[in-house]
Length: 363
Image (cartoon, rainbow, N blue to C red):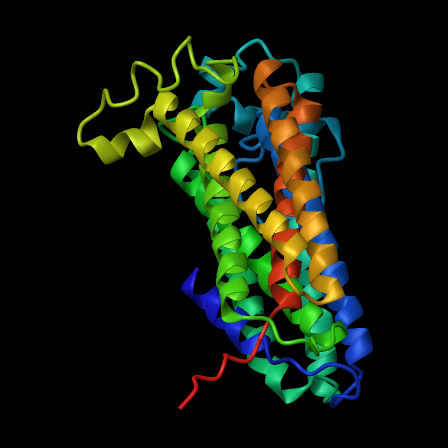
């Protein structure tokens, strides 16, 4: 996260209209990359929910672009899948046609990952060679490219954790994979916003900037906690709201020692923490929105406040519905997509009040 944070800070001063180079085309390229990453997060959610992520047991970045075509190719891929614990303990009765279905989702997810790499790397090289990138953006965009390479490697590292001794991937690696994907998304979005949005003319106090940053932090923590819920299948238990098995705090919250281990490996604690973080995020958004009604803010900031309130309310509704209905795939995927939308609105809000001058201290 530290690398992406540095990128965000560096890109905050990206030039707007009239800057060096064809910045309009650069902004369009970056927004397309954001859309592709958003789609990849959604497809990744479907891949996880359909238990498709381990269907391809090898990492072949180049030759893996082509799926199996012949019956012999499909039989060979299925034979490889039969060697891992997930098949022997979970999918032992799976037919070849059923295998093709889960293979499709993992193949699509990996193919989209390659497409994101091409969609980012090729235009970046082209703009760089033609000197159409503002100088202030070269290092941030190069840093994002490196993060993208790291995301690909981390994705395979995650898959590898489920091929030998487990029937699923490590939930720690799953969360790391999700967080890095969203860090890349956030960095690209921030740079793109810096290109298309002019600096606010109206001064906004530093307190608003800190409040917006606090909301971004809460959103990020809630998403990471949601990744732990997904990775531990904690959403399949305590399917009531607002209480958990008739209690505010579930009975088994602190059954593991040391205490902090419960936050990552105890399904009761993992779900409770996600609920509390979601409630804290919703509360913070409501308070910020209410304060914005009485404050003198730029019109763009007011619109962003309305957007983040709507996104947060929708995300809470999706989360509760997903829980009560025991994680149906369409709702669960919508909930994951909603997390990205909420993060987007939080970043846009912070961007509308960036670089506000500090108030002068009377002498």
